[in-house]
Length: 130
Picture 1 (cartoon, rainbow, N blue to C red):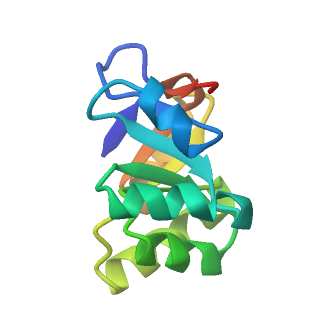
Picture 2 (cartoon, rainbow, N blue to C red):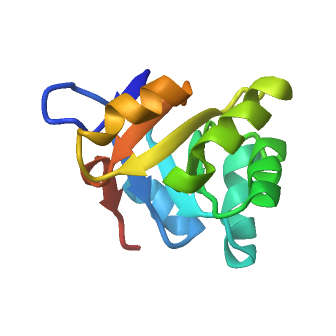
């Protein structure tokens, strides 16, 4: 299981950006983080076309499929979608890893039992302004 942002485990950071120009303010080899919305399609398309790894926060099954189609490296889902998202990812052999955003390490065990690829604590996400 992948664990991002845990206080014991060194991990990559995810950089929440607001626009394409903000990508320049992230370290090399960064993972961009953004919610999947129509307003962010320009950033998503830019990241995909320029091989910038990115994570998309989604809210529903259709968005999971869109995120995979855009070649997201990570798909961040709410806890209630975790099992469904992982089944879809396994069934369609997604390259993307399914992550569940968590606040407490007590949640890790239940998500591991579900077979989810990984978890991400909120402190692993760094907000970048233009």
